[in-house]
Length: 304
Image: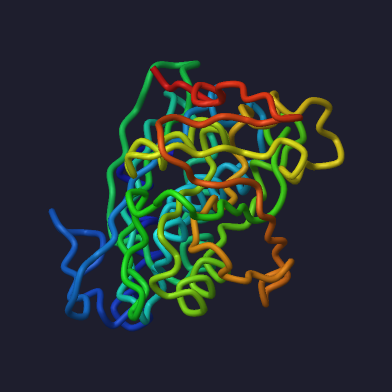
C-alpha cells in the first residue's frame, strides 16, 4: 500500500473522531491535531516497539499493535492516572515500515482499535519507509490525567520504613509470550490512589526488570530497597528467582506505601498484591535470601 493510500484510509478511519471524542477538535489530516483537554496537569509518555527487540518477526499484527499501545498505557497506570475520554486522553503514533510491508492497513486499524479499547483516540502521527527487510518500528505517545485526588504518583516519594509491594506475578514474560497480552494496571493503580491517598508514596511499572526498576525508585528517592527473595511472586514457569527479577516486560506495578497500610491480598479487580520488601536508608536495590543480600540494581534490561 502506498503511503498516500494509507493516509486516505486513515482519514476515512478517523473522519468521525470529533463526534466520538468531543475534546478532539481536529484529528488527522492537518499539520497538527487540535485537542482541548480539561484544565489541570497532563501525564505524557512515549514508548518504542521494535521488531527483533520487543517482539519476534512473525508476531500477529493485532498483538504488535496491542503491545505498542499497552506499553504507554502501563506508564500512565504507574502514575495512578488514566487516559480515557473523561480524562481528555489522546495519543500519537508513528511507524517506520519496511519497504513493501504488506500489513500497513491492518496495523493502522489495529492501533486505533486498541487505543479505543483503553478509551482514547489516536489524533495523529507519521509514517516513513525503512529499508527493505528492515525491522518494523512503532512509537506511541499518550497523554492522560493523574488521579484527580491523589495526583501523580512519582518514583521519588519512597522513604525508609515504607513497605514495598508488587501487583501480579513476575518473570519469563518474553519467553512465555505474556508480554504480548499483558493488562496495564489502570484499574489497580486508580484504586491504590483512591484507597491509600498520600500513603501511596511511590510507584513504577516493571518493564525493564524488577531489580532495575526498584533501583530506579530507590535512586529517585535517595534510599535503598531490599527485596525479600522468597516473597517475590513468580509465575509457575519461572525456574530461577534472579533470572525472573531481571527478565523485564512484566508490566506489573511496584509500589512503596506507608508501613501498616493494610493492603489486601487482592485488589477489587482481582489483581494479586504481595508485600515483597522494605525501604531502608542507603542506596540501590538488593535481594535478601536467608539474611544474605545480593545486589539487584543491574538485574534488568539495558537499552543502550
